Amino acid sequence: MLIDTFGRVATDLRVSLTDRCNLRCTYCMPEEGLQWLTKSDLLSDDEIVRLIHIAVTRLGITEVRFTGGEPLLRPGLVGIVERCAALEPRPRMSLTTNGIGLKRTAAALREAGLDRVNVSLDTLRPDVFKTLTRRDRHQDVLDGLRAAHDAGLTPVKVNAVLMPGLNGDEAPDLLAWAVEHGYELRFIEQMPLDAQHGWKRDGMITAGDILDSLRTRFGLTEEGESVRGSAPAERWVVDGGPHRVGVIASVTRPFCQACDRTRLTADGQVRTCLFAQEETDLRGALRSDAPDDEIAALWKTAMWGKKAGSGLDDPAAFLQPERPMSAIGG
Ligand SMILES: C[S@@+](CC[C@H](N)C(=O)[O-])C[C@H]1O[C@@H](n2cnc3c(N)ncnc32)[C@H](O)[C@@H]1O
Image (cartoon, rainbow, N blue to C red; front, top):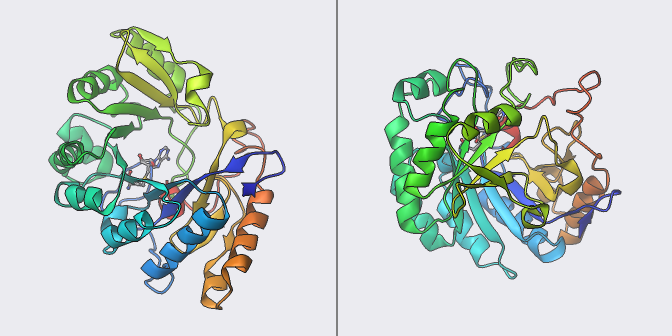
């Protein structure tokens, strides 16, 4: 079991499959991209499957989320999902993606054993999408969403980050659209995880702002904590139900005390938190033929050292991690 000194148990593993992305969202990375990991830096498909095998058979992981960078850029993705679906016990598997290319792969991913997807889409306006992501791919994302829904990768969740002056006024439109299409929308507060270190607390749109904006058009009733469990999204029932909307208030209402996550970067480093300053190298152990027991022990020791919180609630002391979100795995 992956337990820390505060008694939290990690059962949810985020696995980054690549640090590369085909979008350049302004809140994530600069226009020219980043210095990408080399092929030999990246864990191989076999190494990834071995670590997930260790996680589910020895460490109590029950949920695996593939992410990145953009995980659909990983050539071996379908094979990795298929091999993980054959593990005993079988983890529940999901994918966080920008949806580009999902139209082509949704059915194969479902067939391989993927349970569901989260697709990131911040705007309904193609021109705003182009400004925000610096790519003209809005329709590809919409097509990917539809394909995921049709392939049964449900519930299809949509992640949206709101930025003042860009898509900051779109919360009600996004919710109306999500309700109409049967997608579950979750707003994520913008976090200080951009490569450019341009995030400003003063400039961000908060969960409170988002809820105020939604209430201009919808009736929202808060779902009880007993329903939420360790999920980061606080959820509201929309207009009496059945539809729900989530808000992940990582900055203004952190949920660290209920955190059940552990993270693996594309180059095989365990991180206890998005905002952790330390990493534990499992790739070195894998490549020096360490047995499963030894790798599991390294992972447990890493998690034992997990901090109480992200530090975001203490602006004076907060230190942005060296790696940006795309290189950690969001
Ligand atoms: C880093 S991306 C990786 C997976 C995939 N490429 C995608 O677009 O979903 C995962 C999520 O992180 C979000 N994200 C990236 N940078 C962020 C930031 N600084 N604050 C909040 N969310 C961020 C993205 O909007 C996306 O929903």
